[in-house]
Length: 146
Image (tube, rainbow, N blue to C red; front, side, top):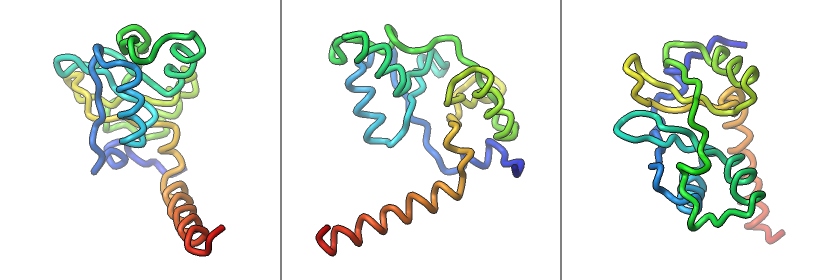
């Protein structure tokens, strides 16, 4: 596996964050809009937690909680492992495999959040090419009328 650096993966990406007071529904809508699988919950430029698709499914929907009333503070994961941008992606993937999670927040030397890497980042250009091909196929099928 090439030694892709986290800093290169984050280049050009914007950080999508939420507050602890945001509802699960609002957070889920933001995740859908931004096409991300997790949000960093940030308070005063510090990471307070993370809210993921799995949290929405397992802690909210499966538990019968109301997504319009449940705040992220109630269901987010608080004790996170973080990584610095000067590390290789392989190191982040190792953390994910060992910890059983799919997202790792990236912080600077002061602990300020810079971004997030996910297991999906390991797919790199192959995933980008596949998504492009799938969009082309869908557009072609739509134009033909399937």
